[in-house]
Length: 145
Image 1 (tube, helix red, strand yellow):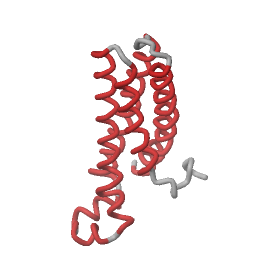
Image 2: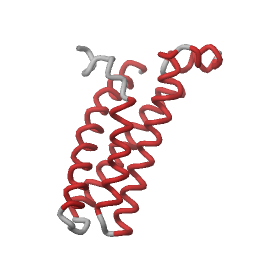
Image 3: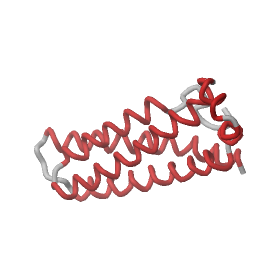
Image 4: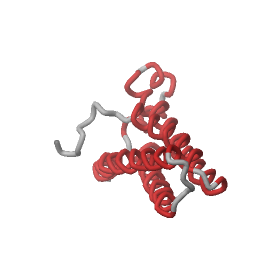
């Protein structure tokens, strides 16, 4: 089960990154063209929240129950925080990714209320920067490679 969920999490990161970048580009294009929030952007907002939420759910399952890294770290958190590799997964990666998912939700909600792409552009950009900065790029880019 662990390997399946880890592979799913690895594949979903690409979906998050690709859709996240598309959402950022579309939102900023709307800002620069001074356009109103379009139905396509609303639909993309729905899609990006679904993708982020799915990725977050898989990540939480790995974090709380399936990952040998985090489950062993929970037994001795003081030692885990001294190990940069373990700390990355136990604290840094997890926290920033949850914040990124929240930022996407805020962006979608604010954009709908304000009928302006600027709100989404700001929040989507912050989210995708967090994702790109704290994704473990040292792991294989695709599972099995």
